[in-house]
Amino acid sequence: MQICPNCNTQIYENVTNCPNCNFDLNYDICSSCNSNVLTDLDYCDSCGQYMNREFIVITDSQLTFDEIINDSYRVISSEDKIVKDILPHKVKFLSKPLINADLHNRYKRLSSFVATPKLYDAFSYNESDYILIEILRDSYGQDLKSLQEMWAYITDKEKLYIFKDWLELFVNYAKEKVLDSLLNFDNLCVDNENNLRVKILKLDKDEYVFEDKLKVLAKLWMDLTISNSISAIDYTKYPIYNVIKNVLEGKLVDISEIQYNLDKLIEKPLVNIEHYADTNVGKKRKNNEDNFYSITLDIKEKSINKFLNSKRGFYIVCDGMGGHEGGEIASANAISEMRKNVLPILAFNINQDDIRNILENSISNANKKIFELNEKQNRSQEKRMGTTIVSAIVNDNRLFTCHVGDSRIYLIDQNSIQQITEDHNVAMKNYRDGVGTLEDALRNACTPWGKVLTQALGPRSSENIYPEFNSLILKENCYIILCSDGLTDMLTSEAIENLVRESWGNPKDVVNNLIEGANSRGGRDNISVVAVKVDVYPSIFPPIEYSEILLSNSAELNTDMIYMTDSNETLVEGIIVEIPE
Figure 1 (cartoon, rainbow, N blue to C red):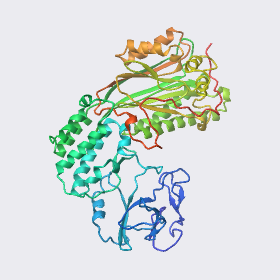
Figure 2 (cartoon, one colour):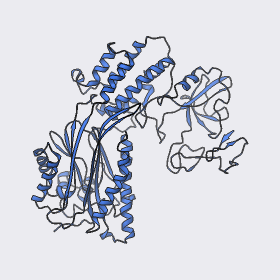
Figure 3 (cartoon, rainbow, N blue to C red):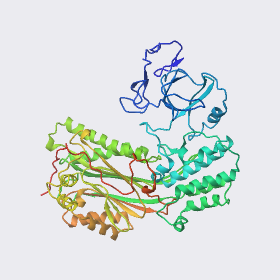
Figure 4 (spheres, rainbow, N blue to C red):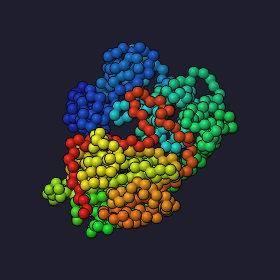
């Protein structure tokens, strides 16, 4: 029997087309874009989505490469025991009852947990049992990264939830005698939602004392959280230390009591965020083409499984261009599009990849909207409206930025000022191409030719827009400053830093002082500033340096510092920017 993927009709005949909807059964339907994909393809040829037709086989039987098992599966790796489903529409589960269903039943009883590998098929074939389970891969077909590899990328709150899930699994896996599945780093990984996942269930070999295995779990927690960058004495300053220590010493043996201790840490805030934003027309301009948006959320959400106590913020500055009824329209449209796309997801627990996709796609959509307005109004290239954009999401102690153009984001901590964004203008492009020094580029960025933008939203189609994304961890009290070039053309980075420090306690005073400082030095352009004050509370976990994480040779080693991305601007012509007299 087959199931039509298009209309879910049960088909009993051996046919190539569904008798109900005439769907060609040589194809499957992509879950991502709904395109028809040939059943022998591993990826959707329209969107690249992994079709997930490969599975791990659990069997005592020897496998031979390229053999066909149960008329449905081709062996593609005899060593790793991986098969590919060659008849994905065929109904197969338990097509032939198992000789010994013990392991299969354990999978079924533990299937309610996200961490447990999902069963795909089980059958008896040639007097041997075969159990097929999912291979833990992402939507691109890449193996999920191990828990150790991902640890440095996960927030403190996400780590605590992993520990809580681990504990719940510990109790239930112990009942099924598969506890060893949870006590080996090689068998544990993390999915895109930062959920703990188990690769395969492993039967416990020996009898054990529950409390002794709990100490083994605590030792794994210790191995995860200890860092070579801090001393053993410093480690004791982090709240997670006492929980792990008490479990290791046998003072905490009740699972509910350990979970209670973790819950108390979850409820502890990581940061406090305050902000203020304003814009000013300046001393020379008659209209204001800048625009900004700012929001800070205090999120307290409790459900049956999770408690979320979080600070989130979303901030934007846009510097429009195109003259009266041009620049302000472009910047307003960019703000509107970003707000529409980002706000609905801001209260959810989203990971870095999701945030990057949302910001980049939102900027691309904003560009499309402004570009279509230019096309509709038949504006010539030199009269097209456009805008720069800098955007930032603060998610507890994580900062994510995405920008196009020469508006900037600065990070000012207790000791220094750091420019997070890199200007998309001719001066910086020349520097990236190897012409001159960074000091030359920064100096030339204020000249008419150096200020010519290589990227902006609106003048060209989205294929020519390359938003630049960066992220970092906020480790100490700091200010995040988003601003248009009306500020940075008038004030040096040093002057900006000094004005922020003079009014550190109040974001409103910071913004007012910066705008006043730019106007006092000429105010040649519109001035927009968003000041975000982030007070960072002591971390729950000690920081893990990325260099300590064991990544495969093919994996890219990230750091918690910002490295500027060289955008692909080789085919982009200069955008003419109006230079005030």
